[in-house]
Amino acid sequence: MSSLPNVLHQKGMKVIPVTLDVGDYVLSPLVCVERKSISDPFQSFASGRLYHQVETMVRYYRIPILLIEFSQDKSFSFQVHTWRHLGSYHSFKFTNQPIVV
Image (cartoon, rainbow, N blue to C red; front, top):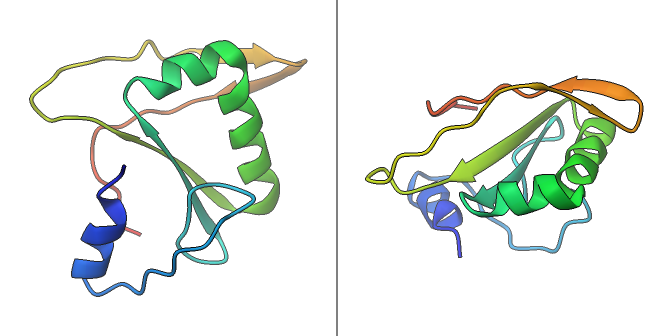
């Protein structure tokens, strides 16, 4: 379970728990976040589920965000590529820096 809702609440943000059709968190009418644990993106890439989730976020939100939660004391890396999937090209940009919305 993610600690993000608790952290946001402690920072003064209003958190309303609801079931969403797209993404895990909606921060504004423009911003949607899909949250993954560090092990989940690899499984999601392989199954095609992540592509579908990101494609849906792009369709409905101007700023889709993929948040990958991980422990600071465990290192990991991604090979950044341009992915060709279902006849279209998509670039994925990864950053380990927090983005303030």
